[in-house]
Amino acid sequence: MQREADAFGTSGMSWRGLFPFLYVLLAASSLGLGVTSCDHGDMMSGMMSGGMMDARAGMGGGGMMGDRRTFATNGETIFRTGRNLNEVVLQDLDRSTMKMAHSCEMCHGRSGEGGMMMMGRAVPSIRFADLSSAAKHRVPYTDDLIRRFLEQELKSDGTVAQTGVTWKMLEADESDLIGFLKTL
Image 1 (cartoon, rainbow, N blue to C red):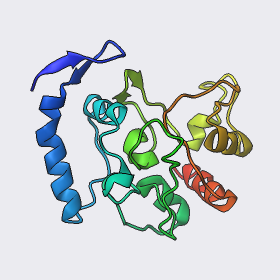
Image 2 (spheres, rainbow, N blue to C red):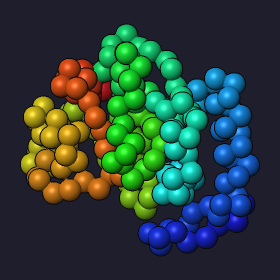
Image 3 (tube, rainbow, N blue to C red):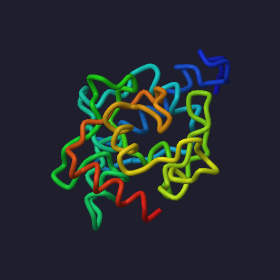
């Protein structure tokens, strides 16, 4: 597969190299296989920054490729699929710069610990124990600071996070997600 430098100076796949990968993902989606996560940050950064996988273009939204799974709690369903138990897509696609609907799990991993590279940066942990740790954050996150992050994309210290993902959650969905993060 050909590789070229992306805007962040890291190696990314060329669009020519992504077409077979995207074809497989689209085929899986049309069969309802619900592909929901990818551990290949360099592949995903190219797809996300190009806006090629827009959920409004017939891919079904939610977790990547229209994930319709549900879990024991609303918070876990949000974390794993990007939808609540009422199947509402919670990513604000109009305001997000990454134009595909996806979930927390997709970037931060099944356990929320992050670690993979995406768009030239390491993805941080969103486990509550890590978010609320003074050893990991100059200003540790609280429930209210996590809510502020979800609503305004502001880090605990008030600086802009620039994740490319903007959420539109009801207060109950935010509380449920925070409750699930505390279990990780």
